[in-house]
Amino acid sequence: MVAKEIRYVSVVGLGLMGTPIASLLMKAGYPVKGFDIVKKQVSNLVPLGLTPAKSAKDAARGADLVILSMPNWDALLQAVEGKDGVLEGSHKGQIVIDTSTSPPWESVAMAKKLASKGIEWMDVPISGSSAQARVGNMVFMVGGKRSVFEKVKPVLDRIGKKTVYVGKHGDGATMKLVINHTLYLNQAAAIEGLVLGLKAGLDPQILFDVITSGAASSDLLLSRGKDMIAGNFTPKGPARLAIKDLRLSLETAKQLGVMLPVGALYLQFLLQTQYNGWDREDATVVMRLYKQLAGMERRRR
Image 1 (spheres, rainbow, N blue to C red):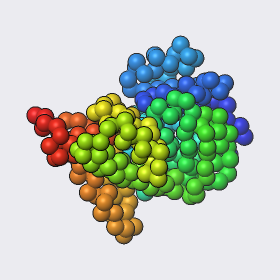
Image 2: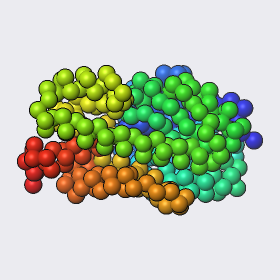
Image 3: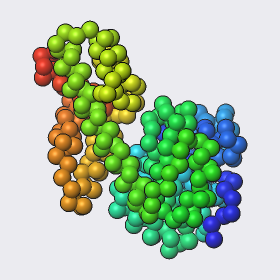
């Protein structure tokens, strides 16, 4: 049986997204226990009321809900199934949700595995950057049992702007890949348009004002356009994560027999940023490659 009401929450993974999730949960009045392999990530939240956990196992012990925020599936597997992992501290009726961008097929398999132990698994990826997460501007996409969704929705509603039930296990993870794939192609379009305008000698401010006032505007341009024009690629969504996400969407497409040629091409540009050592910068750093190809910027060694 799933707990009637979620009272005690644990967050495993206190990085760019896990930290704001834990902070917002505490502001909402939930007792929160947290763990991260980087101890500073934990200690930074203790003054805000976080109860530090010694391990993922310790974090899971006694929690009604465990929220995972991990950088990739391998890290998640270690946190869940590894030594001192979540499963060693879990109990029947506990709910474990994965807010990461994960392979849908792996999420489905994990749901089956945990169900055999009496634990409910939900894929609950997030639409929103870390900056948006800090102010609660997040959309949660939930895949799993409808009955469990009804249990976690009140919690997620208190820390985000919208919680959507997408469907069965894996559907939330798939929806996130669709969103990210679309986002990166929006990014490619914005880069090409901006470089074309800048190469032509258009005034950068006028270029930005006009393009964001008309049909070609987007959230990406509104939030990052000025930085892109200025050559500021401080990470809001690092290129290395974009590479991981696009690879996942392309692998999903392969399994479904879907052609995504433009996404495959843009992945090559993102990979070049990795080869150049820029993959910890924002994914929009691809614009630097375009400017180099256009003769607008010297190639960096």
